Image 1: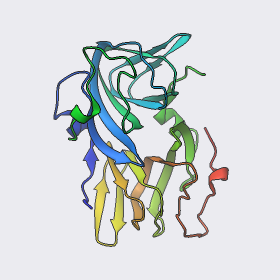
Image 2 (image 1 turned 30 degrees about the vertical axis):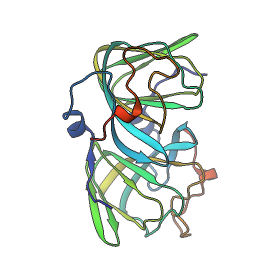
Image 3 (image 1 turned 135 degrees about the vertical axis):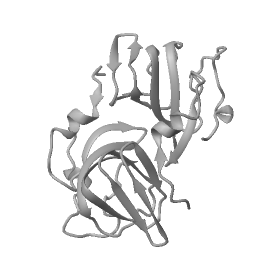
Length: 123
Length: 123
């Protein structure tokens, strides 16, 4: 057991790569991840997993087939499992994610930006 | 499905009661809760649940039987299941918690400050 606080901004300072999640904590089979994102991602859904987005810096729009939500710093949203979503960041956005181990960040969609979880490093 | 962002500070502005968690979101069977705490709580453990603490405002010390961790704003820590802990807030501290549904916030310890989950309101 370690007694080190996990400082979110310090963790963000350790990487610059976009759309490439880093893992900072695990709780009850859920991973807490950080990602820097900018621009558009890809339409996808996670069939079995809810996905929590918390914006730490910047702005994020989550488009859905029947609506959208806008997140600013200090705002969170849970995308329910099975719901297709399309993240768009206007400028660089720093986001904290909570999702179960094994969740593919592009859902069942395999595209050039897919980073397998085993390639998502702990920092 | 709603398309409303959950603004953490706005949610904190809705209550002043200390040591009385409010629920703001659910994801994969985990509840995201907010609490305002000050002073000492009670030694307790959650036998089956990890508990994530994220300090939104103020400072929090988590004492353990064999060490302690200090959390400032923007810092988080996961207390592993089964580990006794004793939260101490120096001044009022605003904390975001992630824990499974059904977690008792005082663990197996029943004391005057225990708030049963069914009495923890959604806001």
